[in-house]
Length: 462
Image (cartoon, rainbow, N blue to C red):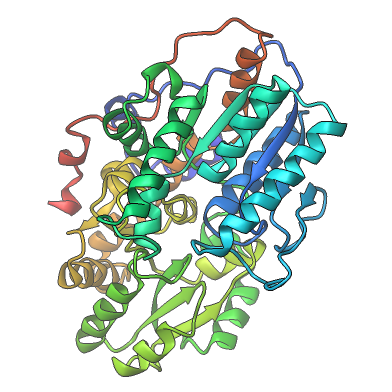
């Protein structure tokens, strides 16, 4: 795979410079090929087509491909995934169809999840508990101590900060202090923590005083065989999809994939789209995600009802062909504590990508990210317009070549440094160390952004 990517990217400079600045080194595989039986705790309505669900799915997929056995225990609701062993909780009687986010209902779901996990552990043996999110880690740490099973905590951001982002709690409230203390205890009680970014690692070290030896960065990754450039798709199928969505052949398309929420920057993106329309009315925004009911009226208020296409929930398997309709991708997330896995999908698609200037965006996009000032609608619109005005060769061949090369370098970067196979070997090696099958080894941070990496961007960001 890497050879093919390298071949299609001969026109661009190698990514060695970015590798040096990021300090990326090869992942350490499980050299002896030990196989593990893993209980993965997923405190969510698995499966849905976004965020932590994709991480859970891809980790499970690659671990099983490497010969390990994974059982997932999750909330009652969620889409079935053929081939995966998913054990579900009982429903709560008053909300049988509820898909859980940050809400009061999650406490009941977590209690049911703990009971289901206990039931499984009473009758089956596992080598490792791999717990996602703080709710899963709390269950895993307690039951791991009882049953003598080592625990890996898959950390994807601060639970209290996420609750604030969702409007579930207030920073100056009593509940925040209680949850912050609980979050700190969970972090300190977890033998190994796998943050999804170097920014998350800094949060654990600086905000929660975790020990460096607890932490091994495991970034979100991407399957570059599935997420690939538009040129590799059936062009007739792409054209049919374009027509079905009502996008004219001569229109340019901005694509976004993910949840539609304020902390994801959806409202800011719509405001930026209004400014873009005033300059170039032939631009369409393809918003792939949910919930739609809040933002469709906002788009209408802004006069964008004919230029913003709401697809609703897009199945994960269909996301690549929808993204292939785009000329440029956008990631306007304003949360500073969560990961941003969608960036890797964009990168693998070889799409020039505009994102707000956050630490996580810098980690993934590196020198070839196109960054707007955090929360600045006008700058976001300006950066998107710059991309859209130069992607067409007939307008400016040199600029078009520049933006094509940006996309190719991003894809090359994703294939080299954010492949799930590499992550799978890293996870398996951690399992082997925790279970004593291989000696514990010193960990070198392979993924961290250098202190001035975000200041040394390529010329298109100057």
